[in-house]
Length: 608
Image 1 (tube, rainbow, N blue to C red):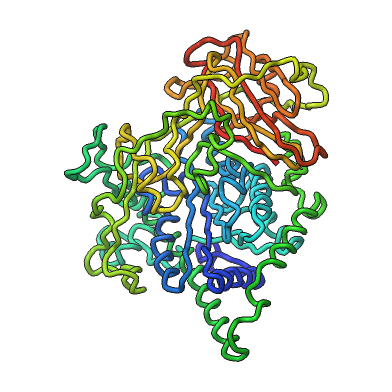
Image 2: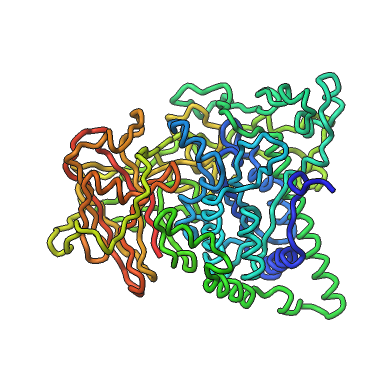
């Protein structure tokens, strides 16, 4: 039998039945069916492709008009970030090894991915495995721990929806399926059905979409050429818009990027699985209502008890049955209780669910909300990109399904690559709030909101991860590829010593946990470690939970966690058993006047 990784993948009958139940629920209630697709930048289609060429884009293009025919609005959120081009070799290898790209949002899952999700596709597998004997779906121990946290947060995120989980670590999926009745599976790439490319002479005998995909060893160098795997166009002249920045001819192709052919195949494979579940669901409704009459009985499609059963079991799932997530306390000082309780968050990263409601500015002190926000060069549809046209005589999936006569126009936006990073020495110390000697009561400190904080490196509030939001996201005047379309940006609220306190209000905690994701240093400079770039006089001060804490440079290096190369996680409140509270959090830097090195930003606030 063929390896499941090269077929459509695997799931269990019980899980597939659960997917069909979700689809029937959407049909019966005419409510949106929400799919989140997330992963590393390669699997999300960055580094050489337009957003509509990515796996999420292909899936949405096929499935959204089909769902409209059955009265269901399909919402696809492609939540991923662009590559970081200033990582050192060690950090780059660490990030590319799989499982690390989704943590920055998983700590605020219910807000950033959304609390209304019906299906999650997790595609943060490593793209570095060239050995045919090694599974590309293998995760190391830390990656498995991070995925367990991701999955648990997905399952606890909402009260009216419960996601089916595609992808991740097999052992984690098995534990969740067996001990908490979670619906799970892993998707393959569908390569087993693709005709092999044997030579340049015979390649034109293979259907256009299948060319250069399944190549024998002697042809792999040819198949991996950029000209075989990538095709893009950054700008097409139009009378109503003149770019402020010279445009590249095509999107810059990055090493390890995955081209449009494999992206399309993976999108088609996911669509095939989804179509099969949809067809089964419709047939089930038809058969039952023919025999029993209409309306369909509640037992076949109601989700309330279904959701309650799984969530209660996830909340009580302990270290004995499912240990991975709990090990994060040792790995990154994450309290074990977060494996059983919902996390929320706010961020300026894009894309994100409900972007106008989930930015940091929604919890920022009203006097500090930046007045200057990203301004788009233009909005609305781009002109038709000729690369979207299927060659004459070749198969067009949309025409087969009679969804449209020609490829629909769909406008993509720019993306300037914002590439933040915090570099600091790795250390094994675990900060313990109980023994910190540098804390003092907040009553001794006057926390007055500072002035001059700025929103930087953001694409704005029009980016929700759907293809349609490309027309209201990004497209900054500084972009050199306005039609690229991807929505990933790493925005933050930036300041320095002169801007004083940054104050966040109205954070409603239930489990006594608040953390910040911080970035230090200007993005235009070559990155240096915090040890080298910050002066010895540097101090970071934060206030939370009625306590003010001052960290000097050495203490910051001890307390600031770096679980992945793109994060600087600072836990500012960890009080188990504190109950429901509304908290205010403030942060500032002192003793650091360098205009570049002493800049810092808050990019995320997480809480539970």
